[in-house]
Length: 209
Length: 209
Image (cartoon, rainbow over all chains, first blue to last red; front, side):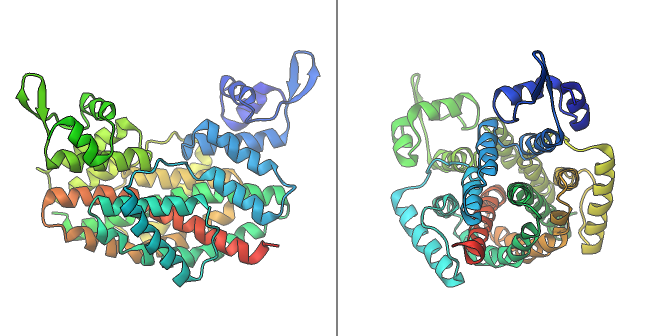
């Protein structure tokens, strides 16, 4: 199909498609003449994914590029590919805590992970984020929120096995990798909006006048 | 204290503090002479909060401003103030789904909320985000992830009561409102990093060679 049809099939305007092509997010089409490229089903699929990441999940374009590159790296073992997608998905955050608060947070998080029997690489970016967040909560005087780490970890364990089961059923490696990316990012949006709705509901029961 | 001491107390550079003052994120200090302002403990507290939101949670500065304004609106009933903070906290997302996918998603989400007995305002922004995300997952062919809505909702219910209990213990309305904001945003970072670590751990058990 031509670029106009690709635009109609996905709802993405032609100038935006051209921008994604220039930025290398979307692979070039096949040249059918010197001035005309032709696009196929993989372009439709990729464009829908880009749109969900950029517009719905509000991932910055530079990070989307890294995420898509991790999708295309299917010559590595599955666990490594998932790790690569996870690293691309974890925003790099500036450290905002004092060294002392970070040392305490590190001890608490290490203890949590060992109690739950999780096997986690010491250099996992999500580990750094978790430690930095715990340290920030302490600095902000919100120690009671830190007390929820175990409740959160337990809740998360309840659906993680299901999530990994679901992505495992994908027939091809490409589809599996795509599911990991979509599930990680949009699953997070599902969880956070459900959490806000549950909070609203309980707050209404308790305080609504 | 002077601006230099405020900078040392919080680890935020003086030019950044001046930027937050200009943008109205941080209230002006008290003028001790025509060229010199003096800052107090509320400035330290507010600056630590801004830093956690901007640097750790990566909330855009314009949105941080709205969030802080919702904190300062303590002349409204508590449930309304929490609602205002929630609205400021929910990023406005562009719709990315077809009308048909959105209609199906709306029916599914409405059914979920009624089955769980949640009392939620129809115009809650988190509701729109949830519907849009379910619609996007369908469009992306990830219907199996949509099947987790109930598992996610059940997991979220397990800690929401605890969260609301914890913020309720704050001695003043100001501190309570601050806890709601911090808990909502940084609690989300805690949950998402724990989820990535749990996924990594299960992926390692299954596929690491």
